[in-house]
Length: 212
Ligand code: DX5
Ligand code: ZN
Image (cartoon, rainbow, N blue to C red):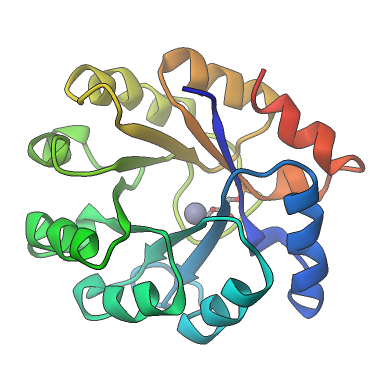
């Protein structure tokens, strides 16, 4: 499977969001990563349903929505209706992950489950045959531009070992050409990158550098 690169718009200029989405779309992005934060699950507030709905109208890229929120059960339907294609929730935030995975799939979205740096991959082992994607956080969720935590990437082989062949293993946080390669070598097949891509002078080159 080719690496799926999902640029995070958290590093875009929100006053020029359409322009910055077109930059990564024209630069060869596969998906668009949308970081939703509620100020409770993480100490930051970003964007919500109305923004996803507006983005849906201006791009054909699959919308990869990363919910860093409490009570994800309450909001997945609204994000699906707004045009999300992939909905990822945090295992730490859900009271019934299996039920939530099934709910997301019933909304015709791909279902992803994510774990924070201090969370053991053991807690999601039972869900691996059910989900479409696992998102391994390699920074504490909440902010872009933090440094990659290599120890977290060591969860990837465990996840791969206990997963069906076609599971997408995505890594998010501190990804650049070097840390991205490290994750791919460990078995990741999707990379999220915000600051690395948006701070680059050549966005197309930066996106390509995450695939080779
Ligand atoms: C962090 C977010 C990430 C963030 C990544 O909580 O989930 O998607 O945008 O930013 P970088 O690539 O700059 O670490
Ligand atoms: Zn994210």
